[in-house]
Every structure is written in structure tokens, then in C-alpha cells.
Amino acid sequence: MNNGARRKFHPVYLMLLVPYLAFFWVPFYNSIEPQLFGIPFFYWWQILWVVLTAACIVPVYLHQERR
Amino acid sequence: MSANSVTIGVFLALFVFVAILGLFGSRWRAGDLSQLHEWGLGGRSFGTLITWFLLGGDLYTAYTFIAVPALMFGAGAMGFFAVPYASLMYPVLFMAFPRLWSVAHKHGYITAADFVQGRFGHRGLSLAIAVTGMVAVLPYIALQLVGMQVVFAAIGMDYNIAVPLLGQVSVPLVVAFAVLAAFTYTSGLRGTALIAVVKDLLVYVTVLAAIIVIPAQLGGYSHIFAAMPVEKLTLPAAPDHSFGAGFSYVTLAAGSLLALFLYPHSVTGLLSSSSRHVIRRNAIVLPAYSVALALIALLGYMAVAAGVDKMPEYAAGFAAYSANFAVPALFLHMFPAWFAGFAFAAIAIGALMPASIMAIACGNLFTRNIYKGFIAPDCAPRTEAKMAKLVAFIAKLGALFFVLEIDTTYAIQLQLLGGIWICQTVPAVLLALYVRLNPWALLAGWAAGIGSGTWMVAELGFKGTTYPLHLFGWTIPCYAALSALVLNIAVAGVLHLLLKDKGGAQTDETAAADYV
Image (cartoon, each protein chain N blue to C red):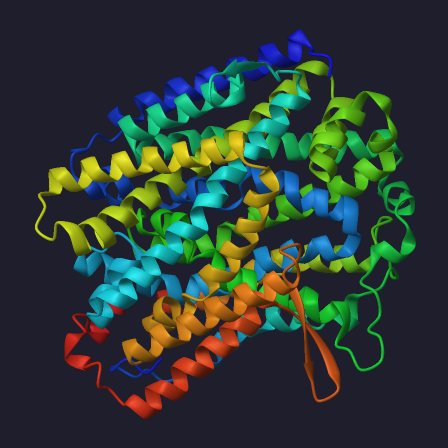
């Protein structure tokens, strides 16, 4: 962000990159095993990360609220 | 298809309820609807909850609910790219779009092209952004009507009458169109927001029922996945010297997520919120819809497991709508008649509501960035609102004509192209929230992106969007929106360095403090 008032970068913002790693590293989850309740890994891993993506935004939100 | 009176009765009751709700929407938090920001942005008044419903209804449209499972039904795992797409867009929404809200609020911007005009003071660039938005959103409206057509066919309401010059015209579709046009005209975004609440509740109930009732009847999720050919359950391994299907999967998600919030109807939904914090909070709570979307995607596999495509009673539907009939057939087969009516009402209303925002967004764009920008620069606010209502109506009429008279495959192809085109507005809108490049450089990049993206899709015969690039002996199958965007940014970046700022930073009416 190079918009005048430069703020010091806080490491909590790195949380926002975690979901991109989880979804973009396809070879890691492109398999049927291990299954969960009969659901192949490919599917439950990604459904899990829908929720975890939102969870990764929460600490950043709280950090911004504190400022 | 045989019509079931219970199904149709429940369906019609819900549809009429929603129509009345939409028409009375103008009285809800009444504002002066002769002002464009009141009609076309709901007075920028929506809080976290209403925005959640509105954006949820806006982004996860009926067409999504039919097309995503249809893709899974036909192609398998590749169709699941909608899930990373619908998740990874939220960190972007969280970081970038509160900035757009703030600057738009400060300067009274109603459209993305308004922002571009203010940021760059360059009418050519803002016109390019406005036209891209309008051209991308029109086939989207048409596809919502296609979604409704599928539903009408499924419940056996395919009544057609012959009209001179137009040929066979679907009566239910014309009625639905009239309802859509009426409430959009009288209530603007307020009516749409009210309908969004009902629509989303119907969708959640339907999804919940579908993921409990249908797997139980099919013998559990393990049976459902076992019914799919095993090679379709995961992405195929990459051949030698190719990045493989995994790369297509990732680029499809990445290109789509960058484009989504730049669609005019998304911008309209975002700017109608009452504060930047509403958008930040929604980035955390909106993924609930993505969970629903993932479960809806799996309906495609349930349709395979149930074998609906082999049942004679649905043969006509599959013949007319191919894989898009998978979910309607599944609902008809699995749900009791009354609940099928409920589920189909969810889909039809899920088409009506986003179609309304899309038309409003189209009206806003034309009025602000073409009519006011070029034809009548000093028109009165009252004229602005009138013009937007008129254009919203024409946009819908155009979409209706398209669906009735022209093969719907063109609407699908145009929508695929629309996604690629809208992605080319990333440097001038999304990146412009952080850095200001030379507007001429951005315009050249935009043209390069639109040109190369369209060329790649034309090379694919307008059937797909994943164009294989050949670099250094490797095959790289990449979503055309993303490879075109890379070219777009490269052209814009290089020209920016060559031109320095001959476009003039003094034409930037925004200041750094306006964004935070």
C-alpha cells in the first residue's frame, strides 16, 4: 500500500495468504484417500477450507479493530 | 413433462408473495426515489445483515445453482473450481473493497467507472470500463432468464403462444419478466434487497433439505461418490511437459475471483452498504454461501447416482437443456411434490433477484458514464434517475428478446466472454485502489487484454475458456481471463514506465486519505 500514510506492516496480514496456499497447491489434495464419512479428500479438504478461509480473515479483522 | 398441481401451486404462491414484496419495497426505509443513489443504491443504507442477504443473493445466482452442479454432473472434479473461487475471493473483498467504498462515499461515486473517471480524469478510460461492465452483465441477465426457463419446463409450465413476428413465446417467462420490470422500476434496490432476504431463506432451506434427504435416499455419501467414474473424482494427472488440469483448475479460480467483485452488479451491491465495516464483516460471514455452493455442486454427483438422466420421464428435459436439467430432474425425482414447488421457487426467485440488480447496475452505468458523461453532462438528478430506470428496463427487455429469439448457447458463450472481459478492468479499478498508472497505459493494456482474451476464446471455438499456451516446450493450460490479464498488466506497466505521467497526476481528484 503506497498511499501516503505508510503504516508498518504487521505479520497478521500473512494470515490472508494461507488460504491461497491451501487451495492452489492442488497436487497435495488431488486424491481420493483419505476419505472422511465416505467423502474423498479432494472434496472435504476444499469444503473445510471454505470455513478456514473465513477463519483466517478473523484475526486480521480483530487486529484492525484494535487500531 | 407432466405438470403436478401441488408443485405448481406452491411455486406460484411463493412467486406471487415475492412479487408483492418487491412492489412494496419502495415504502421500506422510504427515500426520495427520484434521486439516482436512492433508487440505484438503496440510499447507501444497508447494514451488515441486509448486505449479507443482498450480496449473497447477488453473487450466488440461480444460474450458479443450475450450472455448477451441471458441470460436476458432466465433467466431474473440474466443476468444483467454483469452491476455491468462492472462498478465495473473500480475502480480496476484505482488503480491497472497503477502500472502494470509502472513496466512493467521499466523492459520491455510484459505479466503478465513476471511480475511474475521478481517479484518472480520463473519459476514454472510464467509458471503456463502463462499456465493459454493461457488455459483460447483459448476457448474465439473459442467463438468469434461461435459469427460469429450465424451472418452468421442469414443473410443466411450458405454455407457449404464437405471437406475430416473434414466433413461439413462453408465457410464464413473459409474466416473470413483467414482475421483474415492475418491481425494479418502482422500488429500485430496496425491493431487490427485500426479495433477497426471502430468496436466501428459501435457498438455505432447499440446500439443507437436499443434503439431508437426497443422500439418505441414495444410501449415503459413499454411495454417491462410488457412482461416479473414479477418474472423474479427481483432476487427471499432468502429462509430460504440461502443467496439467490442476493448473487450469487454479487459474479458473484465480481469474474468476479477481473478476467477480468488478461486475457491475457486485459493485452496486457493495456500494449500497452503509459503511466500509459492513463490507469487512461480510467478507467473514459471506463464505456461509460458499459452503452452500459446495454442497449444491455435489448435487451434480447425486444426480448421477440417482440416474435421473436415464429415466424416460426426464428425457425431454435433458434433450432441451442437457446437463442443466440435472438438478431440476433430481428435485422432481427425490422431493415430494410440495417441496419440489418450494425448491423451484427458490431457484426462480434466485434468478429474478440478481437479474434485478444487474439491470439496475446497467442503468446506473449508462446514466452516469455514458449519458451524463457524454450526452448531457449537466442533467438534473431527477433526469438521472429517470434515465437509469429506463435503461434498466431496456436491458431486461434485451435479455428477454435474446432468450426468446436467439439460441441460448450464445448467451452462455457471451457470459464466458464477459468473465474474461470484466477481468481486464482489474488494473484500472482494483489495482487503481492502490496505485495510479498512466491512464493511456491502462487503456492500451485494457485493449490488449480484451483483444487477446477474445482471440483465445475464438480459437477455442467459443466452447471453452482454458487456452493452452506453449512456452519453452511446456504446455500451460490457463484460463484465458488470467493470461489476458497478465498481458494487460505487462502492457500497462511498460507503457506507464515509458510515458511516465504524461496523463497528469493532477487530474486525480482522490487523495490517499479518501481510501481508508
